[in-house]
Length: 410
Ligand SMILES: NC(=O)c1ccc[n+]([C@@H]2O[C@H](COP(=O)([O-])OP(=O)(O)OC[C@H]3O[C@@H](n4cnc5c(N)ncnc54)[C@H](O)[C@@H]3O)[C@@H](O)[C@H]2O)c1
Ligand SMILES: [Zn+2]
Image (cartoon, rainbow, N blue to C red):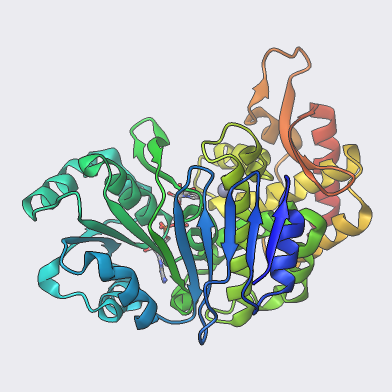
């Protein structure tokens, strides 16, 4: 066992952890109280353990199967308790049934609550019926919620778990790439209100996250885009460019469900996001770097009434704009810039401006009203490739970057 102490930023710590994958390592950042540990590398399950700065600790398992050994052990404390499963009907064969089988959960012990599809399924109005169903089934403080599905199921079931009886245990089984690398990490749970997405929520950590990447085989291309765009964002943000290099080497194989390349990439992505979140669990500062690419993405989504692009398809375009702005005004080195673009291309993400004019996009961008020039705020990468949030960008600078994106990708 090797123990690493790092006073502040955990970049080197992560680098050394990645380099030493396969060995049992205990990596500890003193200031952040974040612990990563290779749990075990039995067969095809790779795991790490996350401890947040608020002291919650839980394992994240990335596998290419539903491992009965891990799953029955995880369920042990709830063997005789009520279990509530939130999922969707279309996920029964691909995830819900095999998970119940691997855990050895009997039909009498569990209540299955299926959500509908899309953002409507996360609406606050659905809660009452689900709370009632749980109360009728005898929920108590020792009950367990399993969230089996993509980000919609994870956010909603996590919110239910956080609020039922002021908080009962829950486990996340992310079944989309987006859920694996983004929504199941970081403890944000939420439902949608009539006037805004994710307006009602909390920070609530799961007891376990388990992802079987073989279950991604039937994911539509757009869902792959969503997950890969956020994964690429993590690779661009991760210190020293080490994650960027490692993903770039295999970028063509990242869309292969169940592949070791995908498994490793998810593990790196989760480790990186967890490191950022651990430093700022309640989103008061540094966590804002996770908005890289999102200033433009949100404007594109708003400009197209949230109908034309999935979130990831807007983010991948926004990442290019952020890279061009970083090169233009922050001195992002050419080799880092080129590698980042090569990764986005290798992942086959949509990168074009799609014929939109810079001023159309600017009209939908939130800007600093206190500043008479109308400055916009971006997360950018500096001359060392480090992320800086709250960087002021003028409309003229944005227009130049947008023109650069037209020249590169149309
Ligand atoms: N909590 C967070 O930090 C956070 C971060 C990012 C996004 N989110 C939320 O995540 C949600 C989006 O998540 P998403 O992209 O996973 O969408 P989603 O949950 O709607 O899933 C997309 C579609 O894929 C289907 N699906 C799921 N797993 C499948 C599988 N293995 N095979 C085939 N089909 C499958 C689902 O049934 C659904 O139809 C949004 O509500 C967003 O707000 C939350
Ligand atoms: Zn996003």
